[in-house]
Image (cartoon, rainbow, N blue to C red; front, side, top):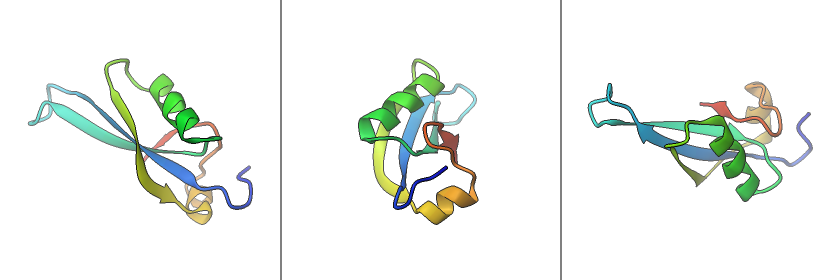
Length: 78
């Protein structure tokens, strides 16, 4: 359950992908976590070891997070 006034953090993940023209692929994940450090750590645990994971300044509102079924502590690809 999403607590009142919680927002979802957006984390950017970039990794090598030989099938892409640039040789890299970027995916954004939404996650509700206790803090930014926890958000990055949780996403790092969910992606390949060689991926670059960084927090963005973007956020999802509580309404949007609920609409897409975001669960605190679990990253969801956007």
